[in-house]
Image 1 (spheres, rainbow, N blue to C red):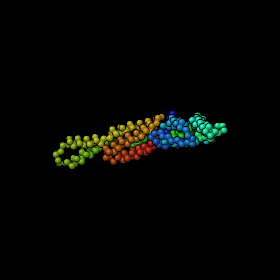
Image 2: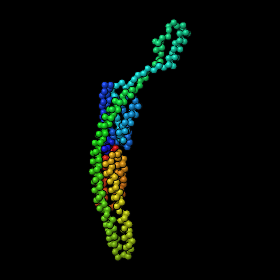
Image 3: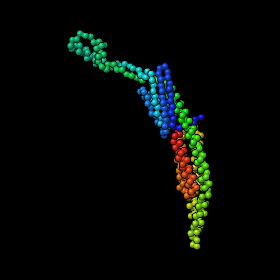
Image 4: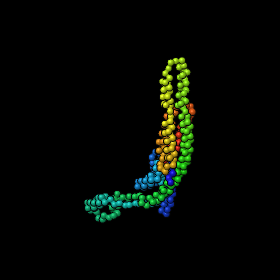
Length: 293
């Protein structure tokens, strides 16, 4: 079973063989995408591409910094390449010089070697030899990294789950006030109007209609319903085996939007206080969710 992981972690791997030794350190931090930065003590684009692919197969999100050190290993192979064009030109010049000045010495290999660039020494990385060593070490480092990310992820899930339950309780309290608030407002509004218009000829039906319209505008039943739905989805994400960090971030935005709407609709001091508490818990959840893969 896959576990929700944090994007923060550290891992190290070390493998030693008769041919050499490899040490790999990996650090990962929060990031919207999988951003990999590789530092090593050898030059091989092919190996760097293989390292990046292996990391992306196991890490979905995060800024990953990796340090690769290979010691006491034949990292390069030297090859001597003959530059035939330079050799031909050198020989022709030596021959022309001999004929022009009637030189008796024969043209020898020693004479040819005095010319530069006849032979070129090329160093080639032996990727086929060192990749198995790096691959084994990298997998050990990734195992260590993912173990730490899973441990951190469990702690984050525990904390978020606790705060989601707290928000659910606050929403339940808000719902109780929401059911009585419009009716209370309507009664208070009518009572005040009757006192102000006592002895005057007014259309009571119109007053009641205006009170009912305003009471409807302050009704937060729909927002409460959507909030409950979002919280159920959030709880499902906490039990998911997929990468849920982005989904959590989206849901926290939606929950925050509904809470803000409730705060703007009501003037009830009890509901306003509950809204403040919900936003406080939601902000803590958002900070935690941003660290989830």
